[in-house]
Image (cartoon, rainbow, N blue to C red):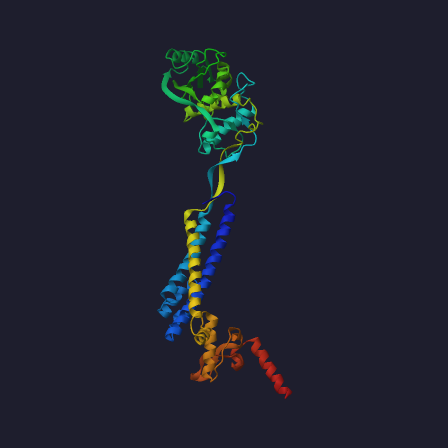
Length: 467
């Protein structure tokens, strides 16, 4: 399950509160179910096994009772339920903490302002500038798209949003570039001669633009590219042929890789048909050279086809966007762009645990109501006799006190709140000494360092003196 408006921290907090609250309610209701079930056993059979009356036992205490009792606390059903709830309490907490995280998913984000490509024109430039903020913005948007698992392209609009991840809805198309063959020439062969040879083989168009990095009479990082247009004023769709030097050292033989590109963006064709392609390639040749290498003295980039396509895509967008990055989409057009949204992911295992806990709570509520109804249908006197059935430590302490009173010939009902007036201590002397529960006022003074007992005895002494 994906949440777009809740942070992972808040989602984990809400889920943990839910699991803690619901499982605590399940434990409390289950304790009532176990007690009522024991009451029914006594009402129907006059007795029940003592381990069934231990109430709800939490956590590791379950295992501690097994070797001592050699009997399952709460019976098979009760013990299984205690283990289930204890396990769920830890499993839900661990899965919620470790698995509920933020992820990125494709979405649509508000565009705001940036460069917006106009496919209809008119356009302000005959060739796109290469030295301004629009070039940097569009060039970076190509890599932002790649980094966000998208592709380079001629986008309808672009801005500086690092979440940018265009879809087909945001893309006019792209330049499609492929690599050809490698051609080798002797070190220092003039670049004009290299270009002429490639033209003779039909791998470059007649008018070329070229540059290189000179090292005395040698060179490296040479690039040549050309347009299929016959002139700047041809007004037609044009393709690009290029060649790039692959060897990093100027002392090595010159190795040239040929490249060719065609436009695969029908909606962008009006833009490039109005561009002065020969001038554009001349102005942009240094941008082309810069993208082909990793820096001075380095070899050709790993994917020159993609880098050349990025240069050409950037060129078309700067031209179509009139070299302006403060534009907004016209009214009535899409005001969003593809992006990656950071959302909170609640995996299916957590959803399953959520449902399991909810179903368990509903089942325990029904079971609690069922046993409460069965108890209500029993004889009133039997209900009264079994009402004080112990189901926890204080309940069993009350039973011990009542048993003490019975051995003393008194039959009294002891409320749990009265346990504060009782102590566990040693009575008798010599071999007759034994551990026993007794009223605080009957306990030996040495063994009962209780303030309440001392106050009771002080009051007794004052009463004696007064008499």
